Length: 177
Image (tube, rainbow, N blue to C red):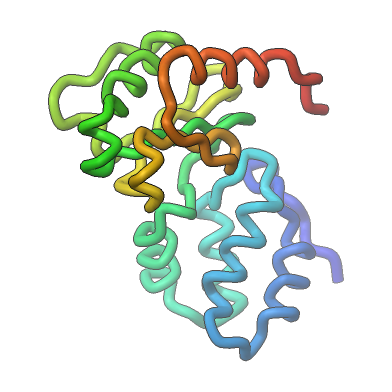
């Protein structure tokens, strides 16, 4: 029996059912399910409707699924941009200028700059859905500070010139279909 696909949920219920079948009974199954479903969503997020469906099909309480989805920074509950730029806000990166890099990104993409303390946990997407800017607590390679991640590629010793070059490279790509 085929399940209808909602306009609000581009990930089909058939796809979710296949993921659930593959993960059934495995340790850490919920994390794997959420990750696979999110990765299959065109906007790389988990709509509430999808979380409800997973809860119903797995008999896992929605509150538990929601707590997992909100605990791990890997998961998104809001639509993400085609490109994601994440700036580390850890101590080493902060002392080496990550805040200034993030403030410049905010201005480049037309957002107001944040006041003190507002860049510690932030995820914001441009109105056209092209780019999501995020801050993360720490990526880990502190010796490479400041660190920025662009579409899952880590860049260390980031400075304004290198960041500008990487952003221009994103602009040069073929538009996604």
